[in-house]
Image (cartoon, rainbow, N blue to C red; front, side):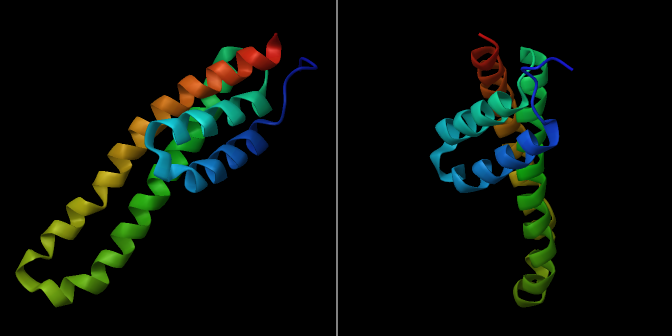
Length: 116
């Protein structure tokens, strides 16, 4: 382990928390969260981008899971259109993949900044 490498699990956790907090800032929030995750992970750009990508995937999956779980409560109210709620859970996952790719780019930049 290189002395400039950090804890990958801590980097993913901090990146995930920042992604949840800064999620309203679309691309910039994802980039900042990925940068911080990559900076904490350290190492080379691959390690930083991996930390950012994993944190972004967790953010999208958590939001998709929350929407999917709450959709069963509303399905009784809207009746015949209840099948739409099964699709609504997939939308945050797709946006999470977009965010994960941006966070991977930010993570690579953060790891490169730390290694210099």
